[in-house]
Length: 245
Image (cartoon, rainbow, N blue to C red; front, top):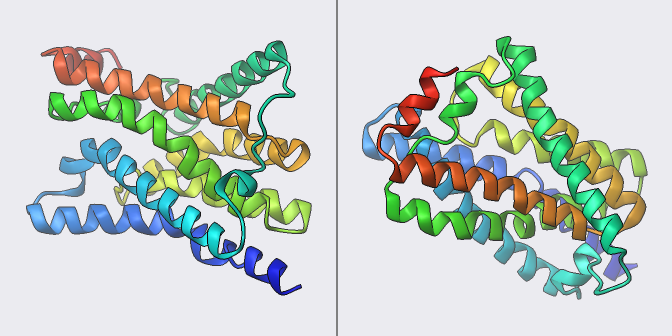
């Protein structure tokens, strides 16, 4: 009983942690640089990578204290998967992820691809964009899926609560990546990621297998990283994309 209680204690402090960290990073960044939040929003991907590293470190540390490895926490097991089924699952997850963003854009801005979605791939220094092209998709699945699936879905006993609470915080963090105090924008970000968050949580609750989820998650962030790299290394590309929406 004691061991079970310790393992479940991973949940309360960690699920809202990423939202808090992103909020603090952008507020402190704005105060230190003397710039508006909107003016530093293009640094979100770098902030995300840093928070990912902190998140993974925290999960690994707390998992060890509760007598688990990271693999055990997310129930990762080698082999035993159909390649065809995995590919179909990844494709489906990616479609839901992209579909959620397009649907939210139309719902809140009347366009499937509103200007705020292009702002997400605003340029950063080219060297950082290249480095983050590797680090962002590599760290995101281990951080977010480890947290919301392993520490959330896997630790809450009630099935409905496991999905609802974990998916809520899964989507909520995106309201602060980047942080901008605009209610419409924050709702857009929340709704954009909610369908994928719910699907990931439901699937993991039923199948206890994070593999396809983590692969699809990496693909989505790789696509974003590629676009950020392109706008960062190709002069005028970002302005050209902005003019099209």
